[in-house]
Length: 108
Image 1 (cartoon, helix red, strand yellow):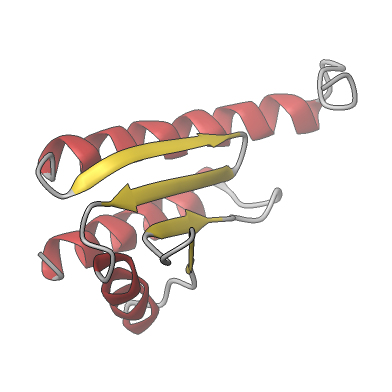
Image 2 (cartoon, one colour; image 1 turned 60 degrees about the vertical axis):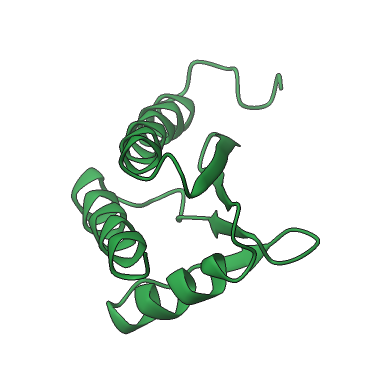
């Protein structure tokens, strides 16, 4: 924890981007209350867990078709895992989060 808590530009940028991701995942969760089990994460590492164990794979595939590279994780690959670069810009992150939201909508 102390390594990242030094007040540096890197820390501030990571926190800001993490908050950007969290807000997007909150919106996705609220739009898909019946489907999303939970979202969780810290910094720029986040996951979106689905009740339907196969949904995460469909979302990852559709996101890839939209130009977004994401992975699945969890014991049954039920989590869509987000690992954006530490150097990602707010606009690039927004573009990726928009693609993720679209992939979730289109795989419902």
